[in-house]
Image (tube, rainbow, N blue to C red; front, side, top):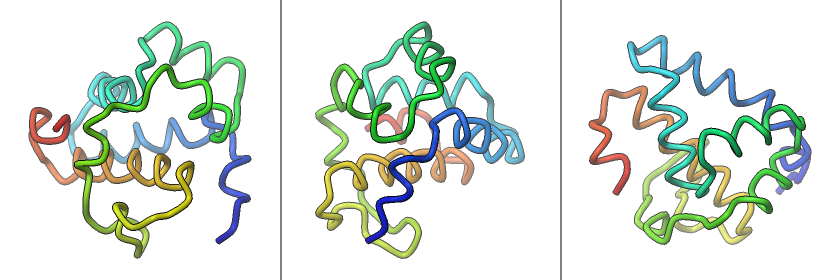
Amino acid sequence: MSTKIFKIPFATVYPLYIQKAERKNRTKAEVDKIICWLTGYDAETLQQQINKNVDLETFFAHALQINPNASKITGVICGCRVEEIENKLMQQIRYLDKLIDELAKGKAMDKILR
């Protein structure tokens, strides 16, 4: 497994999440709500991480608390079952990918935020 993804700045992938959501008539606010639900960041601390241009590894390391319900996120993203990913950081990154994917597919927020 490549760890190059860990060094990608969160500020680089964040607009991609928003674009993906907006293409499907979802909003930046919904993307932010998902990110905050998963990581424990609030709007202010999320924006601080973006402004600091931290990489994904640092972004998740500084998360206040990964939501205890994150373990309920299941399914396939990027060809991998998220519940079977052994590397904790990679699993957290894929959890976020999966949640944004569910948002873009039109799933209701109360279902996404398990």
